[in-house]
Image (cartoon, rainbow, N blue to C red; front, side, top):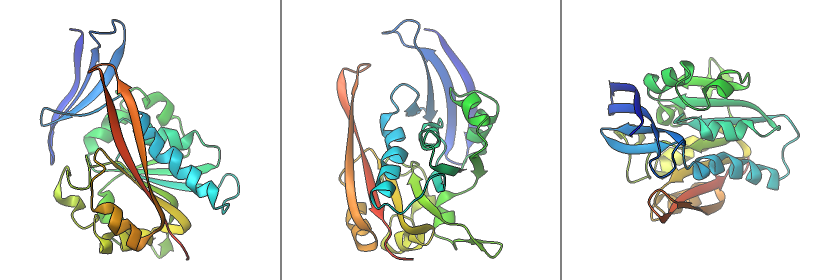
Length: 242
């Protein structure tokens, strides 16, 4: 097998590995993968649901006809391999994307050019990558140095699901109180989008208490590496009022 370990290092969440390998079933096709504590976390091979998180979030903003061109501000929780942020940056109405990533090692991969989208994203002037805890950010005040910092779209792609989390940092986020605090970081009619591999979550009912137009999008792709369908779930809610 053509396999290269690009990085292997301890983190507060466990052993993190970045690897590049050739698919045995598709000679010549190289994929980049991330594992955490030797368990598969993400891949550059199937990225539709990660990309749909910001793409569909922006579509929901357009549906309320609130925005003029070139003014959208997007906040992404979790850098991963960069596909969620890159999808937002494809849209010409997006003026700024900030990604908050918990692990400095992941930011290092991006800065050092180890991930497939590194060259493209490193050259993107609209992108800001911040090392920090997205959950602490969203459940804290929406003001920095006395200046409000709000967004039109907040997209969270960190945990496997609201019930299957990577660490205890998110414990206050997936609650009505946490969602209320998160809504303060959204502009009027702004959208919160949350990624999950599992449809069955109490998060949906909690979002309905805090947000309007709450909906779920099912993203299904055929994973030809294991010869079965793979489904992820995207949860959306819109803030109403100031």
